Length: 217
Image (cartoon, rainbow, N blue to C red; front, side, top):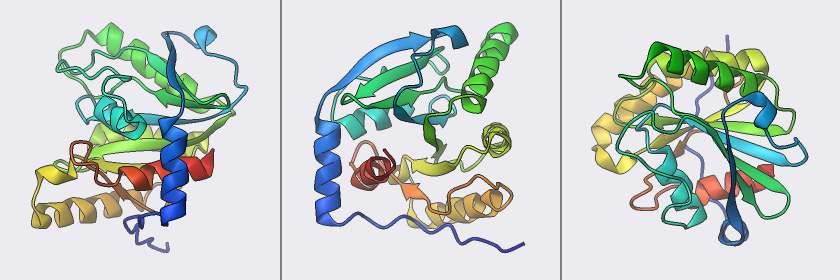
């Protein structure tokens, strides 16, 4: 098997960065929260989704991308987001915030329901261009992340790893996380061969992620 290097994505060219900034500075509205497949909006526009363990910083990242302080609800209680949340990006695109996974202290029946909804969405959404799987840079890829990545492999949905909270660790720890992440991703056929390194607090990597999404949609 050929090993892929999974480099960190390069920052966009200035004109790409500005076009992507304008896209995300335009209208972004919460459309609806979905708790079952029949509630999904029509698959009539291109979308990208964000998946990640609870407390990985998903809501903070979406807020940073859109330049809004609270368009996605951040919570100090992991597992609070129990819905697939759809946001309109302009008139022709969706941003999709998936329920956090890997949370503790939630009833088993609730966890199973969330997992079932997640799997149904990822396996059956024809307009989904890419899933962004968020990984906490302090901890690397965990078993629950592997489960989602394997599901994306089987559904043939391309996913790209976004490392969050990169400002919270030193360079040595970051290199260890990158090495672990790259090694784990070798086993996943749907993994896009570039990583994006971000900090929602400092804005690091946000222009790169915006430009990546803008190029897809």
